[in-house]
Length: 201
Image 1 (tube, rainbow, N blue to C red):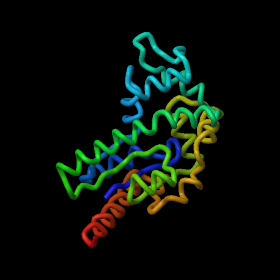
Image 2: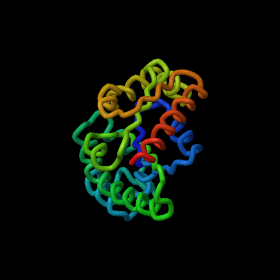
Image 3: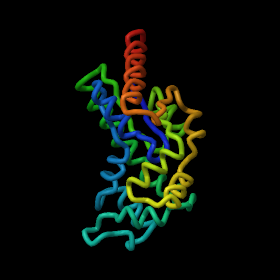
C-alpha cells in the first residue's frame, strides 16, 4: 500500500514520516526527488533554466533554489509553470523507486512525503492520504525557531495551499499540536489499521 503524507508548512510532516519508517515503512521523499531531477543537465534542469533564465544558476551551474523560490513566491502562473516542468520528472523517478521497493519487498508499505497532494496525485499515485495538522500558532512558533519573523512566517503559511483544501483528500488526520508521544501513538494506530486492511485485501 502507498500512503501519501502531506500537511501545512511546519506542521511536522518529517516527524510523522520518521515514525512511519521506524515502524517498517519505506520512504519516498518528493522534496529529495525535486532536488535530484533538477541537478545540472537533467531534463527538468534544462526546462527550468530555459524558462527562468541563467540568473537562477550558481557558479557550479546548480539551480539556486532561494532565487527560484523568490521568482515563484506569490506568483501562481510561474509556480504552475515550474510544477509543469518538474512534476513529470518527479513522477518518473517516483515510479522507478516504487517498482524497485516492490521488487525487493512485495508487501511493502510505502510512505510518500508529498508537499502538495492534489486530487490527481491522490487518485493515481497513492492509495491513502495522511494529512498532518498543526494550528497556525504552532506553525508560526516552529518557523520562528527556524529563523523567520512572525510576518515572514505568516506570509509563508499564506502562500501554501490551505489545510482545509488538503483535508478534503484525507483518509487519516494526525493532529500534531501535542507531545511527540501523542503524535507517535497516532502514527502507530494508523499503521496498525493499514496493516489490518492489507491483510484483508
